[in-house]
Image (tube, rainbow, N blue to C red; front, side):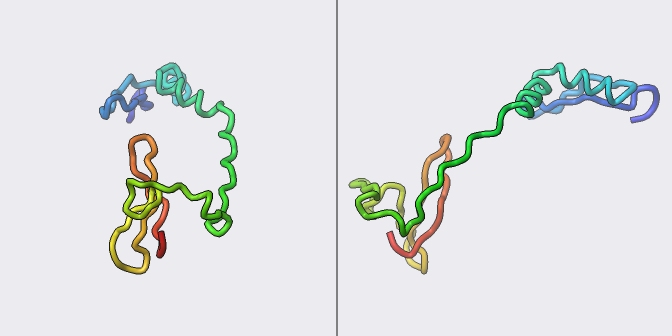
Amino acid sequence: GSGATPYRVSVQRGGTTVTLGRYATAEEAARVYAATPEGIADLAARDAPPPPPQPQLPSNSELSSSELIRSERSSTGFKGVGNLGSGATPYRVSVQRGGTTVTLGRYATA
């Protein structure tokens, strides 16, 4: 931008870019953005405490067979393990997170 108001404030709302105005200084534009719902959310995220550390998961070799989760519904006999067919790593381990399937890895044995 050029002229007396070179700084533009815009946000994304519903997949659309919405321009909220043009301002003479970057600081003035930043104050306008900070007052929007998007700016308030950004400030809250910035000031939020860090997430707690993730627990340390045992390695595959540390788990005994009694700790594995069996499933009668799975053709492999284990929950979350699917057989993808042939190849060096035919078994896939996956979980559902937030409605999305997340693949954790592929392995030679179930």
